[in-house]
Amino acid sequence: MTDDIQREMEAITDLSLEEALGLALQLHREKAHEGAEALYRRIIEVAPDMADACHFLGVLCHERGRSAEGVALIARAIELVPDFPGFYNNLGNIHVQCGQLTEATACYGRAIELAPDDANLHNNYGALLKAEGRFEEAAASFRHAIALDSQNARAYNNMGLLYAAQGQTAEAIHYYCQSISRIPGHPEAHKLLGLTYYSLGRHEEAAEVFRQWVEVAPDHPVARHLHAACSGQGVPERAADDYLEYTFDRFASSFEEQLNLKLSYQAPQLCAAALSRQVGARRGLSLLDAGCGTGLCGPLVAPMCGRLAGVDLSGGMLELAANKGVYTELEKAELTEFLLGQDGVWDVIMSADTLCYFGDLRRVVMAAAGALKAEGVLVFTVERADDGDAPEGFRINPHGRYSHTCGHVEEVIRAAGLDLLEAGEDTLRTEGGKPVLGLVVVARKP
Image (cartoon, rainbow, N blue to C red; front, side, top):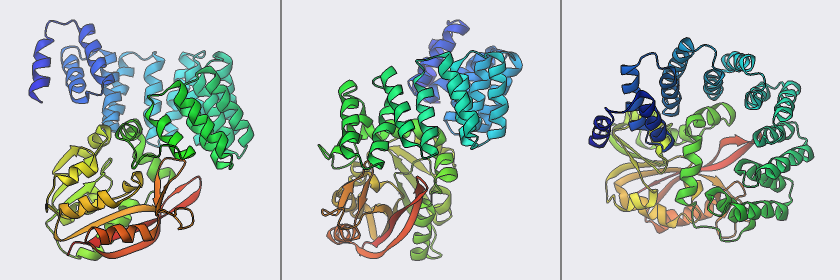
């Protein structure tokens, strides 16, 4: 426990249990996770039958990558207060994010029994039914949610997603618009509507949706980034820090389930295999996982490493990476600036599916070259662009990621003084049921 948290814990001894729980919830909301967890646990030590503390600690444990512990804690809360629907709802949410749909069904069913007029419960249950491919039942649940609460933007959004999954784009657009009309700044509805227009080739309408989103929410990082991506106006050199933090902090708890189960994500495995081809049986490497996310690369390369460090902008992702138990150190930082402070430190720098958030790769690859030892190896993936679509060698796509031509990759590798060893094409993942083609690049510092 850090000194700051210890002092804070000592300062709350005079609070009532309710006041202490309120403080823990505030820390939780502010993403001060270590302090919130310590305080929840202190409350449970004093009052082991305090169901709310068990419940919120369970939610936090799940958010920190310890879902089994979170499930057990919420189950304990249910034992203490067996008729509170919110406990079952959040337990169901965790089961969904872990891909445990049978368990989630039981939880949502019990929650609805206890609170049949709660629109959010019917909406959540509908999302589960959609995930199971039970589209008619899902539609009935969403309609029930809307009937109970005609202003429930999430239910309209989910109905749009349901129609989109069935290829009924006009109906999907109708429901996204209904969601926006109820909450004009609703982020998910704007994002889905804009991307739907773009997928139909209606690029001007897509850009207009994102422009309107910026107008009602000028400080929203996703609104700004997607408007630039879709309109071509004010395209950044790389995705802004606040966009990346906002996106990945909110994606962290379900990141691996989404990528592995739904998108057949292969970038970490491809990078690890490429590295193995170059280093063979060599061990004791100092390796930087650049843009480590939740640490999917870590267990794949740890047997080769004497030192395995990770760097990422998302604090939520780093918490989950720490749970892998393979990193010797983790740091929250912007990648290029971090690399510029590492002069000849690393045997290997690996970056799986991170440089797709950079446009021109020249500066970040130059920084990586400086951070490598002599004979050090750089391994990374990028999404591939055709020369005709990206005359500058790279382009931003409407989903907000950049893609790069093989020519641009080769050029920046040479400019950084590295020798290109591999630049093979492979499928990084699927998206919308289609393969996302990328380049798996390996270079060595002379």
